[in-house]
Length: 358
Image 1 (cartoon, rainbow, N blue to C red):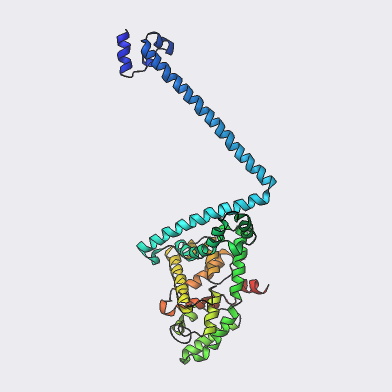
Image 2 (spheres, rainbow, N blue to C red; image 1 turned 45 degrees about the vertical axis):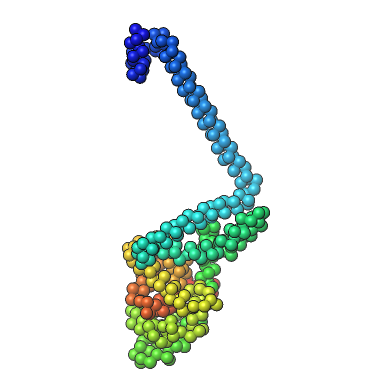
């Protein structure tokens, strides 16, 4: 009998195969194999107890952390709010930075003209965010400096922090402040456009362009077709980038929120115009304005010179559709037309005037 059971143990057949209980199995088992089974069974029981104990203490520790966080939020609500702002903001900034490098890699492989609208927006905004935030983060990393730097950043987020650290209300408020600054340069730019009217040699074009300017002066906006028919004026004097006077150039930089004292003004304006053109093409490639969510629409309108606050989704889409109609006819040689579209298409818009004067 021992030899039969021993053979079965060697081929790893469990005792339950003989319909025996553990005690019965041990009774008919050689002493050596019975001791081995006891060791295995006891080890499993110890492992189970250790696992249960670890699970219990881990659960207690998790509950302790949760209760501690709630206690700190009750005792120090302002401090915990500051902690959440910088914790979440840093994670979002790191995530966007990784996406930016991924988009840069994609751009090298497929070309910038094949990027999506979201990827183009990231390429445009992220370098500015890095330049703005890096000095703040480096200063905060110095010993004991975070006790001073972090509160300063918290109380002056528009100056020292980027959109990743702002809540929804701050993003809207800061976007309106930036847009209001741009709108202050609309009228001076319009005056520059008017002043160059007499420099147009072609009589037919001069009359047609005069009608466009008169429509703007009367508080309305010209039809997109009338603007397109005058696009040749932006290929040469007086409205091409190479022909613009210094004051005209400075006001054009200002309505696009670009630094006016840096060199290479015309090249920077050309680059900005091509960015807008590529974004317009990406919108069309992505299915048009009707495929864009509301947040993307609002960002697009702010970026192109129109205040979208209190505008319905249909109104935003209609306006952006008019912009895309003009943009589809623009090329690099007359990119100046696209740069002037904030005046031609949004100068008299009600939401802009409301923001500027009320």
